[in-house]
Image 1 (tube, helix red, strand yellow):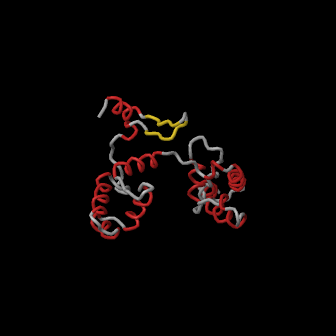
Image 2 (cartoon, helix red, strand yellow):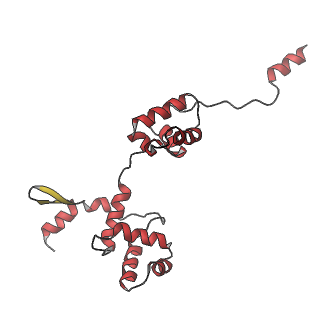
Image 3 (cartoon, helix red, strand yellow):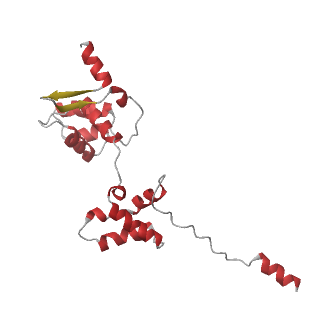
Length: 187
């Protein structure tokens, strides 16, 4: 391996063709090895998937061998295979890590109209569950206006949110008030 190639991998580089960027490889330090959740496929599992598929095993058999659901293996092969159908585990792992690290903007942040509607309903003291049920009824043909209640909660409680938090309702007092008890005793 040449020193230039090693430096390109370490620092990241862009590929150019006729003055236009046609490819980009991020710096390796972004892909530093760290412990990831068991929810995600590890690099070792991806290597095993590639080896077992190369050996001719079906998706179901591969899934059984690595202890994952067949849908997980199928999705992995569909998302991270090249256009020609080949599956390269190291490349697939790098793509998966980059996808995980991308920031995804919430629909409520992307669409000012839905943000305005939600803010209006929160000001009227609607709960996020009520708003989430109301939006598909109010906008039946426009799925970009639909939200899950959890998305509304996250938007409300995120730092520097423009949405107002629902006011806290004090708990209902069920027992006798102390002042009234003292007032009764003094008589």
